[in-house]
Image (cartoon, rainbow, N blue to C red):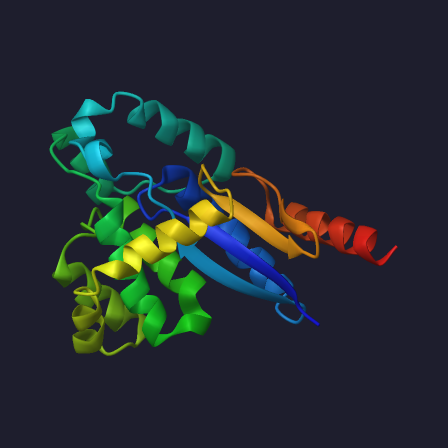
Length: 208
């Protein structure tokens, strides 16, 4: 029986952008023995949806993320930071992710990574329909169906509720489901190999 894992990310989370390639590598390396669900968290909701220019910590955090994970922050995104007016809305991003995931649930992680590249490299808004038309084309999905999914107002709330029920309060979080609850694997700077080692450790302890 495959081990079940849940990856909780936020498309507007810089640390998730840095961690994503490690999760992708980990998932590929362990494809024969794990099942991975990908769920959106709600980092920027309500009063936290504010112009990026009001968040003075962003530039320093990005430098740290790049240093520790090798993540790329492209010119499109850096222009948004310099301008300062862009508002990151996790509810819109989670709704868009759900629309992509519904069409290709087995490629949810690929969709999450494509969204984060669209924002953090190309500077595309994850609140705009044109971005999802672009992403649908990248992923080979029907764009009109994806855009219809953007009207599913409850999709983001359902993901946020699920993340909360799992006890997730920070992103990224990779969880292994066990018979006694969930166990967090690694952290934002973990490599794919380190995540595999952590999985091996927990599975060995269960079978011992």
